[in-house]
Image (cartoon, rainbow, N blue to C red; front, side, top):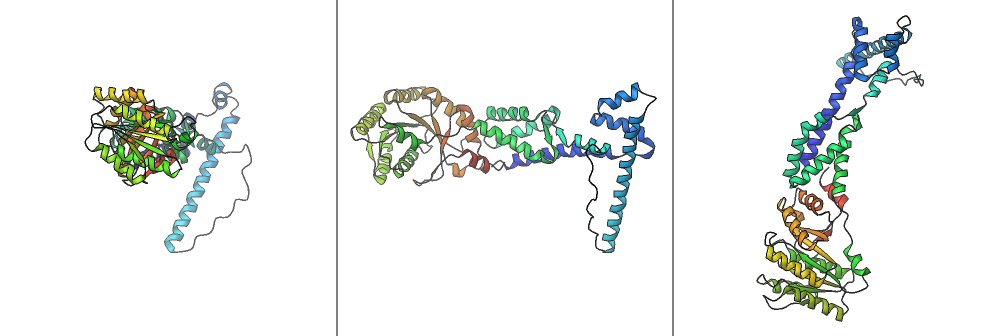
Length: 405
């Protein structure tokens, strides 16, 4: 889903690593006639311990320590020459088609405290820090890639801000920088997404039956079909349900939910079109109590988030029926529009969780991040088709894996 974003993170990691390698190459170059000058450059690059610098200034008659460093430089240069000759010999053998000799194991191991000057230098820059300037080079492009993947602007800004906090000034192993950056990104997504609660467990644990679930959302998101899927899932867990046809506004809505009820073997409570939807839910709860039914699922009319009168109506339905949880049903492919939609419903009734339909057609994944961040509420299920079994519990780790990070 986040393919382009992953490539950009890899590119960034490669660039930072290359910059570190340039510093190494700069240290390893040491012309014969510029030993003292090279010493000064190396000291600036890797911050030679202060005792060396102080020794040179304060104890000029005694240059023993500085001579040791110079000697280390000369030895390292000789080592580089030997390696160069060895490489030239290998290249000559390859050109002649001769087999290469196997490298002999080292007979002597370096004793503790006898690291050469160059090895000390390179060990200091095997860990690198990403500066704010380096981060800013990629910041805007990373944000654009998030927006292209249906992540809302305010959420994209939050992710970039957190990524900046995690990365700037942190010491990263040069050879692992790509993995480190991706891990930072995954960590931020884990923070945004709330772990879902188990509806089946909640229904079973409630002593005062029934457990009441109110479903809401805008028009055309597949809310009624989703209710049927949840009812079917509860039935498979040995739980009984009654469906409340509280969408008394949309034409054929009652017939639609009745058809689902007949197929699945559930009682459907309904009134006439135009009647009070809150009363439908009330009667369904009353029926469930009388017949010892575990769960009541209340369908409501789809309404746009800008329709204040209809939002007040669903607020009334919620107050009258006092549901245990309120679930917002939205489309996984909605993108930025989902933010304003879910904000309005959350403000009106205080939603408990989210179900995203059409997740099987979503190749980006940004909507899940957006609604999770804005509401701080969990995504409970993903709808992945039209059949009753085509609904799966939301799994945060699996979602992150499918993003391709």
